[in-house]
Length: 283
Image 1 (cartoon, rainbow, N blue to C red):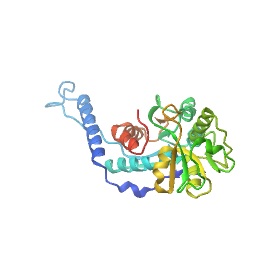
Image 2: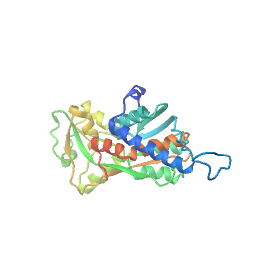
Image 3: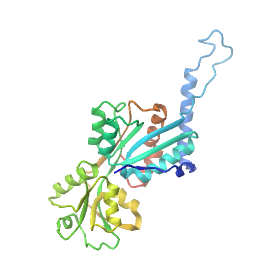
């Protein structure tokens, strides 16, 4: 499946107040650093007067970001806010299953930042020596059972997914949501024969929205993003396994300065608040 690509129409969105405050603080920090490194009369015999602070030029241009499908709604908004607060920048985000995105990077696709839905898929990139530094964990997510509105299959618990009368969609095992589903089902002793295995979590959710299956194991954030088209049934408790999201700038990023700026933005309190608002688990 070709990864979904964020449309450009959202780039005209005005930044929120908290975005402006966060970026203003960042600009102030850059000014201080520039002032410390500026040359003046003390180290330049041809200079006159006190040292002059020279603001660092803001990163400009385009970056390509690959992000897990479950980040779609949140990253559409974050990319639009970042562009609006940084005129002259374009953040193109392509979404898909993290394992497929990691393979694109290893195959040599020109990518600036990677946001993965599991440590295992990020490891594919780090093992290939393509991640700059240590990837940062920026969120967590848990599974939830999604059923069509009205719950026609009468699903009430994870155990119901083992019934041959219940059509279930799961993510493929190599995708983070599929790997997590396998772990959770095995821990609960529930054997499921899926009606379909999907390449990413959004595809599994779509099967529910279209009424093609009675239930799917997807992330709780995807159930929330789907609104009234689906209903969610909680899975497990506080001890039930979750998945961690990791972020990294790539070694061969075509625009490393802008890539670093966007990565910093996602990891900032502004980005973390946006993720928390969408239902991701932070910290």
